[in-house]
Length: 637
Image (cartoon, rainbow, N blue to C red; front, side):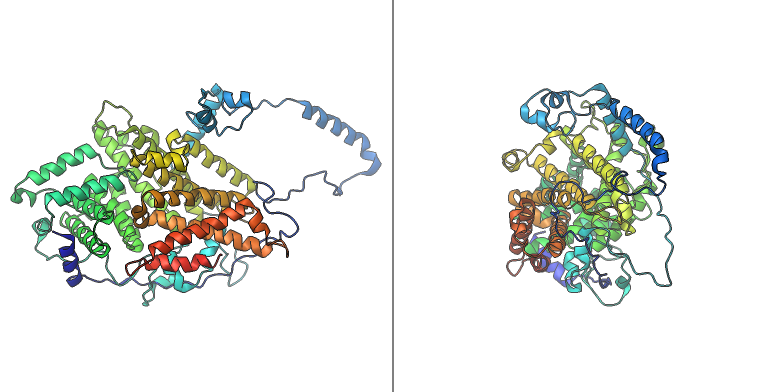
């Protein structure tokens, strides 16, 4: 079926469903500490003022002259203690220690050794500590309930957002929030239940799946709308070109074997085949259509939605709510990504809830060696890869929505993924490294960022906790392979000429990592200030990955909602930091924002994001969301 025919059919037979929302009134932004009289960018560390003992304050227990002997004895002991040599292990590589250069302690090679082309070796103790830290972040993920706080009165005002990254969203006008896509909740907003429609996270009058189907049609009715094989091959190849590198959960060889076998069957046998396979094929056609650049945009959109509806109908025919399989769950994971890209993030969130329950029901959250000891190596590998796909989707979606994570209880270990190249279960080594890196990052983000933000709690309550969390993030980053860390604009542009798959993986992993690191730096509490420089630098790295994606794959930058929305939130965070810093700047020092390189670069990042969004919003078929976001970001300049 041609895309133009599909679009015509969709216009006549589109169904609607009731989803409504309204934005909650924003709480007043908290006041920043008065930083007048000193530069807030004097160092890369957090702005803290510590008063140590012995700084000139009077000890109330001081006993006058009678205590001089005891104090001198104490001073002698302290002096002797300071002379003792610390037995601290060297964690940097031996080459960096010898050259006295900064080492990022990456494995298997640090960045400094990569650039110098020298042998990178670590001490035995350093390797032991690195393995211990890495295994600790891969353990079983459990969330802890927050301590109960006593109410100070009959009515207690809602606490302001614990992150400057969220306050920018809360202070925006209600009319813009549908385009901003609130990062502080979705269905959890009380006004969501009001009858007034509101386009928040794509919520509108349209049901996500158009209704083309009869009660008795069954799978034959779905197979009737299959395109010819030539067109299907083009769309499936487009899926493996654009989507599979980012979410590599489907074993390509076995899928194409099933795919070719399906097309070789006579029509009667097609109608009796596994409905979950048909659902998987249709959702891959839908995603492939989203990334086609040759079709007219409106026709491509209607065609993709038609294929997604056929995929959903195939799942219904296969009774996906009462039964589950690897194929049906793979199809559901991809349907969620399709809905999000199609500006139906709220529907995707709801559909993902069914997916999580079915994944738990299948036991995907359990170690296959325990629950399926007699399964083949390939089957165990597929279960692990499917669980990580569910876990990643849940974790990084709730980061954007500030809602509680669901894929929290598991004993599946990242390190159990098979690397045996002689086994059919083994995938491309770079794919396996990408999966491991994303999985390890998701484990850390889920417990340390998702859970507290879903309860409006600060990510870090003490300075020591924040320093430890940042160190954990850096340890995860050092565990990424060199190919995902040692890149710049020129090298990635050259790599895109012959290995676009690795380029896409590099950009997605970089964006995910630095976006979450930005949230850590931007978090604050009563005892922990914002690390302004750290937040701006992390936001710059994250939004630069989006700029690279837009430069190398412009159409894909338009389609990927998660990447596009992350970049917009990063621009909001930058703008919020600049605005609050400007309020605290002394009179006559406003030109400092042009002289300080970090501040100047931050303003350029916002300006470049606005420029990209303007291009996305141009013309009659331009994105209304992009145009609204331009208005919101322009207020920061």
